[in-house]
Length: 64
Image (cartoon, rainbow, N blue to C red):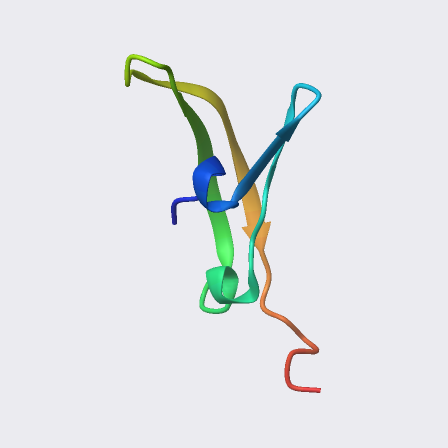
């Protein structure tokens, strides 16, 4: 999955970033995933500035 500032998928404020996920982004996912944040400079060069892992769990209440 790819999120972009230009399409509203990432918010940057006060030297922090927040990636916005919708239900449709994770409905079919469960398990451990790796993520990385790439920034593109004004010359078009990409740099990885953050990496990490996250765990996505299946919803126990989705069908309630």
